[in-house]
Image (cartoon, rainbow, N blue to C red; front, side):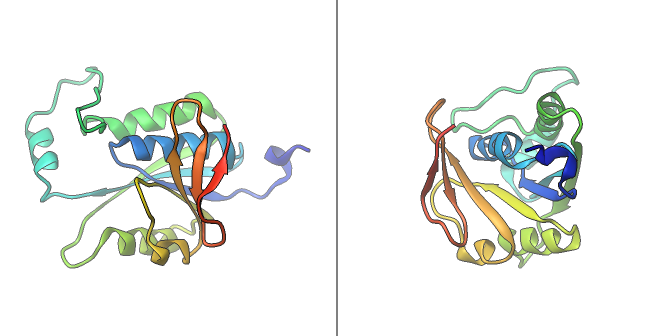
Length: 170
C-alpha cells in the first residue's frame, strides 16, 4: 500500500528543544509517523528567563560552528532548530517543514502552551520526547505520542492515551 500519495495531508507537530529526548521524538516522527504529503511543525517554547537561554544568547557562536552536546545530553541552543529542520529535509525531502516558536508566558505552563498551539495550528498528531512520565492532560487532548528512545538500536517506548509503555522495535 502506498500511504504517502493517497492519504490526506496531516499536520504533525514535534515539540523541539535541545535535548536527546526531543531528538528521539523527531527521529520517531520521521521514521514512523510522517508521510511525504504531511506538514511537519517543529514547535519550540523559548524561555527568556532561563539561564541557559540568556548565556547562549550572549555567547552565540559565529554562524557555521557545529553544535555540540553538553554533559547533560542537551544540544547547544544556538542553532538546534535549524539543525533539526535540516535533518528533516535530509530524511524526508518532500515533507514541508516549518518552525514555530513562542515565548514562555508568566503563569502558563508548557503543557498548556503546547495544547493551545496544537489547536491553533490544527495539529493532527503531536509527538513529544519524554524522560519519564507524560502528563495525562497532554495525552488526552489530541492524537499525542510520548516517545522515549531506548538505546541506539533498542527501539522506542511509546505512551498514548490508550497505550502505556508500548514497545516499538526500530
